[in-house]
Length: 285
View 1 (cartoon, rainbow, N blue to C red):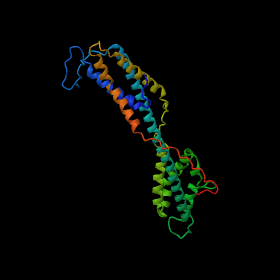
View 2 (cartoon, rainbow, N blue to C red):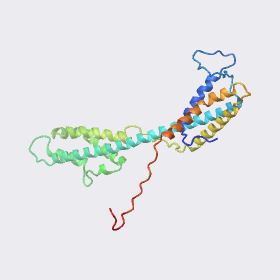
View 3 (tube, rainbow, N blue to C red):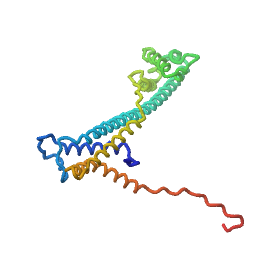
C-alpha cells in the first residue's frame, strides 16, 4: 500500500483524531445503553463491545505513534518559540547596552562641563565637580569601562553608582543641574542589569531534538499497517464487516480525496524562459 506522497504530519494527527472519534462511537460495553448524545451509526453497523483484535492492535500502535509524533512537534514548536524569545532578549541586551553607554557619555560631558567652570564664589564650587569627575572617570581610563565585557562593565558601573548615591555627589548633581542626567542614568543602569541577568534570573533554555524523522516514519508505517488491516477485514460473508471497514476508513478516504483536489488546484509551473537567438547578421530585426 502506498500512502499519498504529499501526506504531512498534520494530516496524520488529524486522521488519528477522526478515527478515534469513530472508534469511540462504534464501541459500546456489553449491556450498555445508547445515549441521546451518541452519534448515529450507519445502516448495517451495530455497536461492538470491542474492536476485532487484528484491527485493535494496529490501531493502538498507530495511536501511540501519532501521539509520539504530536508530542515531538509540540516540543519543537515550544523550542522554536523559545529561540525567537531568546533572539528578542539579545536585541534587548544590545539596546540596553547602547542605552547605558550613551547615558554615561552624556553624564561625563555634563560633569566635565561643570568641572571646567571657574571659581566664582558660589556653591558648590567647581572643585567639587572636579572631585566627582575624578571619582567616576579617573585617568588614564576615563570612560573605557563602558567598552568592557558586560560583567566587567557592570562591576565598574555598580561602584560608580554607589559613589553617586553619596551625599557629597548628590550635592554636586543638584548644584550644577545634573538631576535629569542622573535620573536617566539610573534607569539605563537598571535596564542593563535586568537584560544581562545581574538583577534578575535569566535561565538558558535546554536544547531539544530537531530531527523528527524517526517519529514521522513510525507514524506512517503504523498508519499503513492499520489501513491494510481494516481493508482486509471487509468480507461479504462476515455480517457487518464491510460496514465497519467503510465507517473506519471514511476519514482516510476523505483525506486522500482532499490531497488529490489540492494537487489538481495547484498552479502549473511556468516554463522556463529560453533566450531568443540573436538575429543573424544582415537579417531583418
